[in-house]
Every structure is written in structure tokens, then in C-alpha cells.
Image 1 (cartoon, one colour):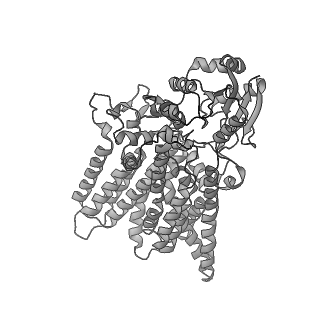
Image 2: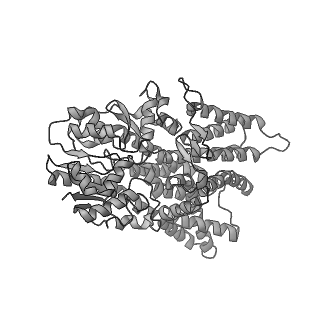
Image 3: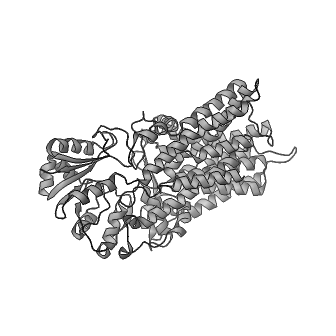
Amino acid sequence: MLVVVGLTIWAAALRLRGIDFGLPQRVEPDGGVLVRQAELLMGGSEAPWREANWFYYPHLLGWIVGPFLHGAPSGASVSRAAAAATHHLETRRVLALLAALIVPATFLFARRFVGYGAALLASASMSVSLLQTWFAQESRPHAGAALFALLAVFACVRARAGPSIASFLLAGLGVGAALGALQSGAPTLFALCAAFVLAERVPGARRPWLAGLLAFAVVLAVCACLYPFFRDTPDGAARPVLFDADGTWEFFGHSLFKQKVNGAGFATVAWTLLSFETPALVFALLAGAWAFVARAKPASPSIGASARRGDLVVVLAYVVPYTLALGLYERTAERFVLQLVPFVHVAAAAGVFACARAWGARRPRVAPLVIALGALLLCAPSAFACWRLTTLRKRPDTSELTAQWIMANVKRDERVILVPFVDVPLPRTRESVVADAKRGWCSPWRESVVADAKRGWCSPWLAFLAAHGDTLPAGPRWDLRGFALNDAEVRDAVLADPVSWLRANGARYAVLELPSSPEASPFHTALAARLARDAQLVQRLPSNANGASGEAVLGYEDLPRPRHVNWIWCLPTHFEVFGKAIEVYRVP
């Protein structure tokens, strides 16, 4: 067990390494939702239900994060820009530590199906899961939700094997927690149903109806606490769940489009596992092939074959519906696959030991060598990729490098236009802060407090300047301005003649973030082409970026394109800096 503790500490340390990436000038999409929700739960508003963030996620993770949020520092106490994103950084740290607990959870779950050594290997490989490490460092809830989903399935497996009121109450609590962490925990209900139907029974005993009913009652009670917006709000606001006339389901701030249910999500699931979890997927497929061809039985001395089959049905009752839900929906994202990753790693560990049994059948001395080699192949590539990812996130990203370039090359009286959604961590003039705070040109679903008003904003740095800019230590300030990208008239004017528009707005420079693909943002792609034609490119970061070619970049959002990139292999060698490519143009 000391090994599992050590692996958990290692996983936590790895996930905390470079966790302040992008802060305070940029957060991942939806990254501010949980932060604001935790603030609201801690008394950040007298009427929190009036903010969209109150409804966006259930409240379990918000209640976990909230007590760890401390007061934001005053402007006079700021010694570096990162202090502007105190709550974002604290949220990330809590979620990263929570996500590291999936290592011991994977070990406990694996022991139901495989031997001690294979369970250790599963937890070791889970500690260096690239997909889990990638998202565990963000302030989005998906890595934490994966932990609670795994615990819920494990509790259901235990309830099936030892049905009692206590075990089913624990299973109900686990399923309620999975639902309370994220809406995607709903398929754990299928595991609870399977546990009840397949519950082990003493000959002549009745099915544990009371225990099952109590379990579902616990689920409802937990959801009533963690989904308080199911109830009517004091001001009679409508519930945030409804069907539009065209069949679109508005689900707690998320829009599910019926025309997107076309099966395209299966490609995303397959690509995500192949790209982020390559070694685990390979060994998991080997385990499946071995079990099918040789009808092999994983070695687990304390559990019989019949019990393992019942346990497996409970697991599949969760995994199959969840996978189908992801696969059927076109807009499935990589982070949604996190809830499948622990099961893949358990299967991968079983695959390593299956290979060892196959080779050791005739040469017993070879088996330990096969296990050692398999463990190395399973863990080493992912560990190296995770270390490289956190190394890149520790370094200044492209926004910070752009800020350094502006400090060295732009005069104080020269205006710089930041094309949404770029921000740089530099002190701004008061006029530029007020102008941008009024525009609210960033994504409207992220609410934060800007000059005592809730604005849609994706930059904690600008929000901090709006609230405390007057109290910052004396020093140089820059005239950095954005524009309202959500204003169609402004977009059309910018694209029609960007140089004339920049001149008319007093700009000497324009800073543009390149999209990861032309399809990701046609506006940014078209604007980059026009600026390249009519203005002077004076800086491009990173230096090896290839313009708007749509090459792979380490951006802040999910990376569904290009799908030919395998992150396990390209992370160690392909990248020199974190962040999307940024170009700086001088207006002629």
C-alpha cells in the first residue's frame, strides 16, 4: 500500500507542476465557471441564481473548492501578474489534488478484477495518464468528475458482491456524488441498477428490495442538494432545462442539438484514446484479444470467476451507455473521455500480465521480464509526455512572450489592438481598461466581476485591472485595446479593410492569435491573411510557427484538430512553448 501512496504523491506533484500556465491573462474555455460558482456558494452574491454560472454545473465540486478560496490581493500588494488570478489558481490546485486521488481509486477498483501486481501497474500507469494530467491542471470539472464516476462504479460493484443496506447506501451516495460532480455522471445509474439486479444472494433469501430502494432514495436526496436549481428560485426564475421548438435541449447552460446526434463522436473517442493514451490503448486491446482467443481469466485470488463476471457486467452497464452517448454526439470533446480512462488502464495492466502468462507458459523465467518490459512500455512514454507537458506549462507562454516583446519594442504612447481573444499581462492605461470593460468583447458565458458589474470576460488580468488598476505600483503602462468581436458590424468593418480600420482606431500595432485550423475560426484565418498582405509582420511566436497553416498547437481549449497528431509522441519533440501562435503586425 505504501507504493500506492507514493504513486499518489507523485501524481499530485506532477499535476501541480506548471499549474499556473496561462494565468492571469488567459483561462481555458469554461474555466472560469467553476471558479465563479465556488465564489457564489461562499456568499459571493445575494441572488446567485441570477447568474448563468450558478446553473452551469452541479455544485459538488464548487462546495469542495469554495473553502480553499481566499480573498483576492489588493492592487498595492501585487508583486507579479499571477496574483490577479488567485481564485483561478487556487481552484486549479484543489482540482489537481482531487484528480490525483484517481490513482488509489484505480488500484482499489482493479483489485476486483486482477491480481495485486496488475493493480499496482494500473495505478502506476494511471498516475502518468496524459489525458488526465492535461485536464487535471485546468479549473474545469471533468478530471474531478472522472474520479467520482470511478468511485461510484466501484461502490456499485461492491454492493453487488455484498448486498446489504450499508453497501447499497454507499453505492447510492457514490452515484449521487458522480451526478453532483458533473451531469455526465448520469450513466452510473445503470451500474446501480445492474448491481441491484445481479446482487449476490444467499440461497432462499429474497432480493434486497429495501437496500435498493434506499440507494435510489439517497441518489435523489444528494441530487436535491447539489442541483438546487431544480427548485423554483425566490424570484420565480424559470428552470434552466427546456426543449426549444426545434428540439434543441438546453441543459443547464449546455445546448444539445438533435442534428448533431449522428455518430461522429465515435471518431473523437477513438482518436482521443489513440492520441493521448496510446500505450494503454494498445495493451488494453491485447487484453481483450487474449481474453477472447484464450478465454483467459485474470488472476485475482480473492474473487471467483463467477463473481468477476457479475462485477464486469456492472462495469459494462456504465461503460457501454456512456461510450454510446459520447459516440453518438458529434460535438463530443476530448475531456469527456476522461471517465473512460481508468477502465482502459485497468484493462491495459491486465494485457501486460496476459502477455506475461502467454510467454511464461513454456518459459516461466521469462514472465517477470515480460512484465517489466510491458510496464516500461506502458508507463515510460506517457510519463515522458506528461513531464514535457508540465515543463512547457512552466515556461512563459506565447502571451507572456508577446508581453515581453511589447515592453521592449512598443512606445508608451503607441496603441496596440489585441484581436480577441488575446490578452497580455501588462499594466494598462486607465482609459484602455475602462474602454475594454465596457465592450465586454469576450465570450458572454463566463461571468466575473469587472468594475462592480458582471461582464463576459475570459481574462482575469483585465478584470483585476478594472477593479484594482488605480492601486497598482507606479510604473509604465501601455495602451492596449480590444474590440467587440461579437458585433457583426465591427467584424465586417475589420475584415473589409483591416489596415484602414486599425488606423481609424489609432492603432500602431495589432496582435493576432492564430487559430488551430481555418475551420476553428474563419474570421481569424481571413484576418491573418489580410494583415499578412497589407501590414508588416514584426514578430511571430513561437518562432517555428507556420502562419495560419492549421498546424498542431498547444492551445488552451480541446484540440480536436488536426486529428493526425499523436500527443504522446509529438509532445517531447515538436513544441518549444505553450500557447497558440501569435503574430504582431505594424500598421503602415
